[in-house]
Length: 293
Image (cartoon, rainbow, N blue to C red; front, side):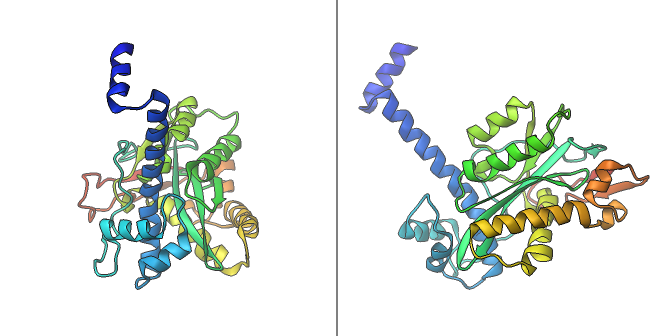
C-alpha cells in the first residue's frame, strides 16, 4: 500500500506533505463556506435589500476576497434578483443523522443543542456560539469571535460546556446542531469523541428550533438594550446576558422556573417540545421531542 501511495503522489507531481497541506486548506475553506451560508441567510432576513458588496464589507470572511464573495453569492443564489428559501439551513457534504427525533429527554446531559448567530457592532460582524442543555434550557457554553473558524466558534464553546459539566456523567449525551461546517470539523468532532458524545444534525430550521430560540432571546431581550463598542465589550455583554438568562429569566415552558432552578429541583409536570413541524416537507422527521421534568 505504501508503494502504491507513493506512486499516486508521484503521478500528481507533488510530495505527500504538500498534497495533505493543500487538502487541509481545501477542507477548511469548505467548512467556513458551509457556515457562511447561514450568516448570509440571517443578513438577508434583517436586510432584505442589501447588496452582496455591502454584505461583504460587513462580514469580511477570512475564506475569500470581495470578488470571490460576490461570485459565491451569485453561485449560491443569494443575489437580490433571486430570493432564497429561508427555511433551508446550511447544507454541506458531511452530515450526521438526526438522533433526537422522537426522543424523551428526562434529565440534563442527554441532549445539548447549539447554533451560531451574528451580532453587528458599529458595522462589524461578530459571531456568537451558544450551547444549551435541552432539558433545563441552560446555556452551558458560549463564545464570541470575529471569524467563523472552528477554533474561534464551536470549539471554545464546547470546551466551556465540558468545564461547566465537569465531573458529571455524559454517557449517552447527544450533541445536536445544524449542518454548519464547524460542527463536523475534525478537531471539534475529535473533542466530542473523546467524551463519547454522539453528533446529531438538523435537516431544516425546524429541527434545531431550540437553539434558534436561544439566539433570539439573547439578542432581542438582552443585547438589544445593552451598549457595546467592540468585541471585548460585546463579550462582557454576552456574559451578563447569559447569567441573567440562566439565573433570572423564568420560562413559561418550565413552569415559570429559571434554567438554574430546573437543574436544582424537579417540578412535577411534563414539558412537550414541538421540535419538528408538519410543514417541514424536506425530511420525514415530523415528530416531537418530549421532555419529562
